[in-house]
Image 1 (cartoon, each protein chain N blue to C red):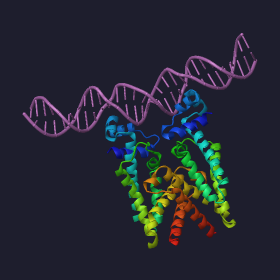
Image 2 (image 1 turned 90 degrees about the vertical axis):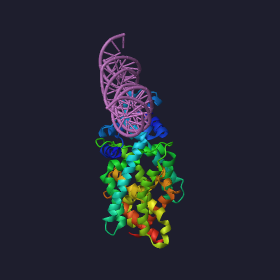
Image 3 (image 1 turned 180 degrees about the horizontal axis):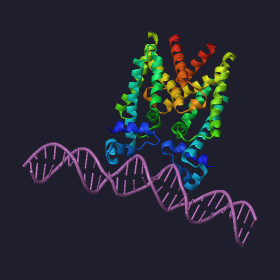
Image 4 (image 1 turned 120 degrees about the horizontal axis):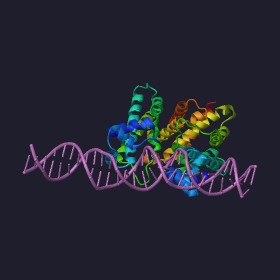
Length: 185
Length: 185
DNA sequence: TTTTTAATTGATCGTCGATCAATTCCCCTA
DNA sequence: TAGGGGAATTGATCGACGATCAATTAAAAA
């Protein structure tokens, strides 16, 4: 499969050194065939990154299943764990930017959105019935919070600042916000 | 100045379309001279991104100065404000990754670290005397929190999820964490 | 002026994304 | 079985990129 091999190549060399030609060579096709299938370089990257999202969602669902009763911790550990285990592929999600005139195919948005859906559900479960309505917005905010910590962890910013346990920081922030949400509604 | 013109080119076209050749052409030098000065493409990007950090720090210091008494709000607004006003240059900071065998020159680290120093100082001022020691670590965490929100704002993730005021979310998270820190020490 | 050093140039290389006329493959019909 | 036609595949070709370096020009020292 083109996407599977493309994903492997991304995992091997990272976004900056990724090339469509090399993917074609690895799978034994010509560069022309690859462009007939995907149309543009951007569409190939989109397909690879959507695959990363799907694998990530599976990874996190698995972490939730086997993570014991502290599901918020499992969620954060799943976020960080996947990023660490799949540095290059994970980074490529955020390294790639669509040109302003190109839009993401809706089916990719749907697949990628499932990761957020998982988080919304867990945040909902962590909140009392009275503030369920706030769950989606709070969940988005907590994903952003964890993402910021994970990004600084992966790109070395935290190491540069002498921070040794970025995930603990992220988890602490998430717990604070959840507990603040519980008392304020 | 090579760096100033390079910075403008980055602001104009963004990281993906940036080219050293175009910078040389814009400044009226040959591509060879540019490579004699910077050695590699990576070093040129580093210089441009460090300039972005310096401009960013100045921008935030200015926001603090003219932001009234709510200095935490001024800090967050400064973070988001610069990113919005300088999308391409700001994004380039996080789009660029050094190859594993290349290290950042220390003088660049120092200049870039000043942004964090400003935040640490403000967090310290927002905490009671008893927990000043926690200020640096909490400040790093809050920068990561705001960064996550700002990144999702800039790259469209928040818009895709229907979020209309990412900065308000970030500010709410920061206030929660500061108030939690105040009561726990 | 002459000599030495420094700065600047741009042709050249290999690789990239992208294109498309030419070719190959495969299935259907007579 | 022969052959016709649509679909899939190819790779040479293009312009642009990062990078190199022998040749050239400019500046400083003698």
